[in-house]
Length: 573
Image (cartoon, rainbow, N blue to C red):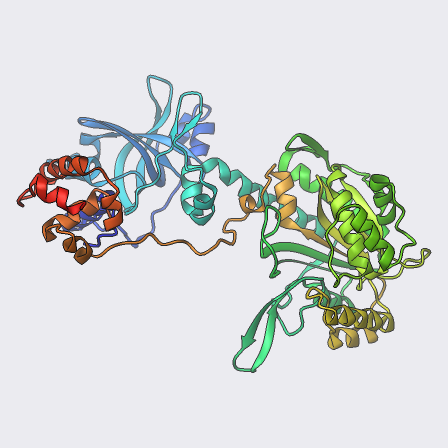
């Protein structure tokens, strides 16, 4: 047996073999028809007891209390937990009591999936429970779940709380910490509510390529790959904007997409290299119209998730009901720094950054310098939903020039609780202007800006066929869900956030132990005691190890010679 297995894992595998020896398949293929769920029973039994005379539930065993010929257990399904009551003679009506005496009492463990048929009743203490008439094993768990204890007040002790373990083993996290399921249920509601809003307007959901020959539509560093058959480089998309605009050229009045984007950049509490964005483009509209649409849409989304428009986020109550505050980029910088940067050139902006102790580098042009000032001095102040509008043209190569303000574009970003969650433009549909803007991006790329946009000749060709006036919007779904679920890190709202490679525990071979004098027959005993490496053994207390060896020999009923104390001491030399 593998020395990497813990004592619990070894015992569970032994139980697995015993189940099979009894003719019980611990992983049956047949459908188990579930008719009822824990939360539904808890909510409705008292009002409609006759409805629950015959129920079929399924889930994990989470607790057990064995009391001779009768036992209680808790079963957890996708909706919650419910107590079940097992009586030996009810599930074993004949002479053979193996199912109860051996299978349930000895071979089943916390974490095993079972199916139960029976009827609902209320115990003398008032707990709604299922009286078990039939018990079916559906899946044997070979790894023990963490034991999370809850007292009568609901306080959690010995919880599965380490963030890295929770994110890496989300399947365990959501099993033993079911309260976190609500985050992902609300995430689903956010997307459904937004989709329903768009569909009600007659806009069409579409799909665009994830593998792209040109990484366009945003300023970001891409992930690069290679297509072997075509012998060409490809990129995971950083945005889907340019393909959605092609569909507006094709004659669709409104298109949107919920999709994964990939940016080969830093990771922190609000950034994951793979994230979900929603982008929508509506013909014959502008960014002013889009601000009104966003206010209406987000209020409806908040109400769909919480029933009200106001949401508690940390210490702040955020109200998603419009209208939202509107400030131009220049106005916001002047408001929070007292500096008017609207007429400054690149040299002046660098001086401002130096005065404000904002770190910049030589690759940054005017647009990026303004963005750095805004990020450092303005963003954190924007708690209630706020539209920042009218950006410098250098910052936004895909937006239309402002209709009345030279040097600006018709763009807004929506900031909530100090973070940007939406970005929108009156879309640039002048193909000549667009080509000139992308050529300016190539100059920035030549200066070393690895986030500068690439030239996309096919997109420019599409614009030359004519694109109607259009407004486009992108919303970061992950950040929006963070707000609507009161979470401070993006990892909490992703089922499987990106993680560093897992560090594998070092495991020694039997020969490593034998070399220090451990008899071969005692190696597995040491492994069962938790010593998987010689280093772990040598770090232990020799006297305790000697005493524990005797205890394990007795517990496991081993017919092997006990090593002498001097022999054990020699292992630690």
